[in-house]
Length: 417
Ligand SMILES: [Zn+2]
Image (cartoon, rainbow, N blue to C red; front, side, top):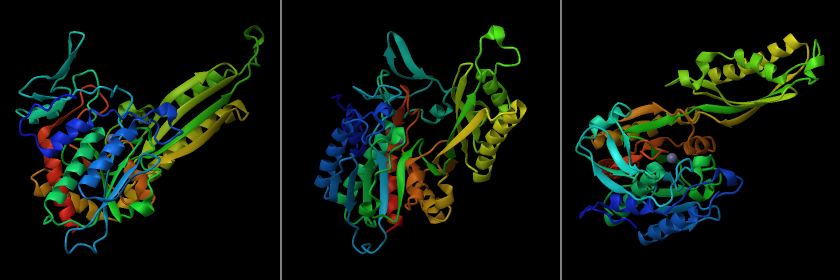
């Protein structure tokens, strides 16, 4: 295990340093089982042991590798509703997460160089990441450039664990009863699915799984997948006159009807999109897979209607039902639920402000564990971890951000006491 170079490392840094060196990649190939990779149990058991040592109650690792625990309230807050804090165990498999070697780079200026691979520096420059300009003279935890770091979401795990340790050491710190949960398989979309909400028994929760310090997220996309099938008619091209229907051309005609400005490469902020994920075509059959995303439910429905109208147009032009559309709903914008709990957002803003961090409310251009949990009855906004450049070899987190987030969480739980 790589040694921590700082003589007086904070508790959260010491934890983060250890947790990122326990590999926990989830595996899309095995998404039919939870956890999708057995290695996630390694970190799950380690955290459960540490939670027990810190005096947590009802600590368990379920058969599906969920770590759940309860922390009793501070004196006088026993009757407050229980507040949940959630992070995920797994890291993405898009970049290797094995043999992570964290180290600290004292950033001064220019490109942030995290390591070197085959003589080429692994680096990111301030023009690609302007936020670096605000991190001058800070200690940044990086990988060695051959793997991701795993701040997504081991920073969230370490920050929650460090809060638990702080509350255990300082019983005078006010907090309501807490539920702690570390989920497997968030990166492949199954994070919150098998969390037993009755046993977790929280009234509301926060996930700690966001990016740079200060982020508060409570709006995500509405999401569905559209599979469009094209039935052609194949015949020898020499005899094709007035008879052949090429499914590839049906797809091309269909795709041309979808507005170009709705493609992801032309959208940002609150813009939704229709994204062609893949297409396969022969003369006889073609199948195109699209994903549809929009924060606004009406705009989302309008995009689905657009796909259906394009199919109807091609069918009418051909005079047969050669195009069919199958829609599979994926997740919904949790704002629909969380909007009923504005106090969750206001309290998070206050907690950031109390630690001199400027809160920034941002729409998520994706989904989150919190979306699923919100619709299952546990309203659950997402908070920053403090990390940058997730899912890549440039991933890093400032030591200060790790430490600050523990203070933010302390301020947050105090406000629910
Ligand atoms: Zn994450």
